[in-house]
Image (cartoon, rainbow, N blue to C red):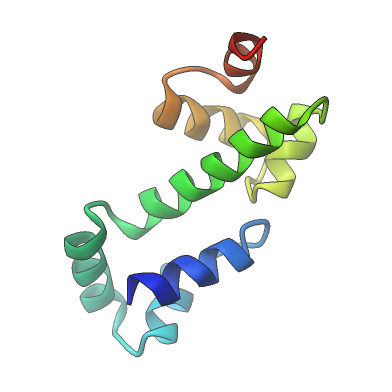
Length: 103
Protein backbone atom coordinates (compact mmCIF):
# COMPACT_ATOMS: atom_id res chain seq x y z
CA UNK A 1 0.00 0.00 0.00
CA UNK A 2 2.70 2.50 0.98
CA UNK A 3 4.64 1.97 -2.27
CA UNK A 4 1.56 2.68 -4.41
CA UNK A 5 0.66 5.77 -2.41
CA UNK A 6 4.20 7.15 -2.29
CA UNK A 7 4.64 6.70 -6.05
CA UNK A 8 1.31 8.43 -6.66
CA UNK A 9 2.28 11.38 -4.45
CA UNK A 10 5.73 11.74 -6.03
CA UNK A 11 4.27 11.64 -9.55
CA UNK A 12 1.80 14.38 -8.64
CA UNK A 13 3.90 16.41 -6.23
CA UNK A 14 3.05 19.73 -7.87
CA UNK A 15 -0.68 18.91 -8.08
CA UNK A 16 -3.32 18.67 -5.36
CA UNK A 17 -3.27 15.22 -3.73
CA UNK A 18 -6.20 14.32 -1.50
CA UNK A 19 -6.76 11.53 0.98
CA UNK A 20 -9.82 10.56 -1.07
CA UNK A 21 -7.68 10.19 -4.17
CA UNK A 22 -5.15 8.04 -2.34
CA UNK A 23 -7.74 5.87 -0.60
CA UNK A 24 -9.48 5.22 -3.93
CA UNK A 25 -6.18 4.18 -5.50
CA UNK A 26 -5.77 1.39 -2.96
CA UNK A 27 -9.46 0.50 -2.72
CA UNK A 28 -10.14 1.56 0.87
CA UNK A 29 -12.56 3.98 2.49
CA UNK A 30 -11.03 7.29 3.59
CA UNK A 31 -11.22 6.45 7.28
CA UNK A 32 -9.86 2.91 6.91
CA UNK A 33 -7.10 4.18 4.62
CA UNK A 34 -6.13 6.95 7.06
CA UNK A 35 -5.89 4.53 9.99
CA UNK A 36 -3.98 1.91 7.99
CA UNK A 37 -1.66 4.49 6.48
CA UNK A 38 -0.85 6.02 9.85
CA UNK A 39 -0.10 2.57 11.25
CA UNK A 40 2.22 1.67 8.36
CA UNK A 41 3.87 5.05 7.71
CA UNK A 42 3.98 6.32 11.28
CA UNK A 43 2.28 9.59 10.41
CA UNK A 44 -1.06 10.73 8.98
CA UNK A 45 -1.41 10.95 5.20
CA UNK A 46 -1.47 14.78 5.10
CA UNK A 47 1.74 15.01 7.14
CA UNK A 48 3.38 12.44 4.88
CA UNK A 49 2.37 14.38 1.75
CA UNK A 50 3.69 17.60 3.25
CA UNK A 51 6.99 15.96 4.22
CA UNK A 52 7.50 14.56 0.71
CA UNK A 53 6.79 17.99 -0.74
CA UNK A 54 9.31 19.59 1.61
CA UNK A 55 11.89 16.94 0.63
CA UNK A 56 11.27 17.82 -3.04
CA UNK A 57 11.65 21.51 -2.22
CA UNK A 58 14.90 20.83 -0.37
CA UNK A 59 16.36 19.15 -3.44
CA UNK A 60 15.31 22.12 -5.58
CA UNK A 61 16.89 24.56 -3.13
CA UNK A 62 20.14 22.57 -3.30
CA UNK A 63 20.12 22.70 -7.12
CA UNK A 64 20.69 26.42 -7.34
CA UNK A 65 19.23 29.85 -7.61
CA UNK A 66 15.57 29.06 -8.17
CA UNK A 67 13.35 31.61 -6.43
CA UNK A 68 11.62 30.24 -3.32
CA UNK A 69 8.21 31.26 -4.68
CA UNK A 70 8.82 29.11 -7.76
CA UNK A 71 10.04 26.22 -5.62
CA UNK A 72 6.87 26.46 -3.54
CA UNK A 73 4.70 26.00 -6.63
CA UNK A 74 6.82 23.25 -8.18
CA UNK A 75 6.77 21.35 -4.88
CA UNK A 76 2.98 21.54 -4.73
CA UNK A 77 2.35 24.25 -2.15
CA UNK A 78 -0.47 26.74 -2.67
CA UNK A 79 1.74 29.74 -1.93
CA UNK A 80 5.03 30.73 -0.35
CA UNK A 81 3.52 31.22 3.13
CA UNK A 82 2.12 27.67 3.15
CA UNK A 83 5.48 26.43 1.88
CA UNK A 84 7.42 28.30 4.58
CA UNK A 85 5.20 26.97 7.37
CA UNK A 86 5.43 23.37 6.16
CA UNK A 87 9.19 23.68 5.60
CA UNK A 88 9.70 25.02 9.13
CA UNK A 89 7.63 22.18 10.63
CA UNK A 90 9.82 19.59 8.89
CA UNK A 91 13.27 21.20 9.11
CA UNK A 92 13.05 23.66 11.99
CA UNK A 93 14.11 26.51 9.70
CA UNK A 94 12.48 28.65 7.05
CA UNK A 95 13.43 27.93 3.43
CA UNK A 96 15.59 31.07 3.23
CA UNK A 97 17.38 30.23 6.50
CA UNK A 98 17.96 26.68 5.29
CA UNK A 99 19.28 27.93 1.94
CA UNK A 100 21.72 30.27 3.71
CA UNK A 101 22.95 27.40 5.89
CA UNK A 102 24.03 25.51 2.77
CA UNK A 103 26.62 28.12 1.84
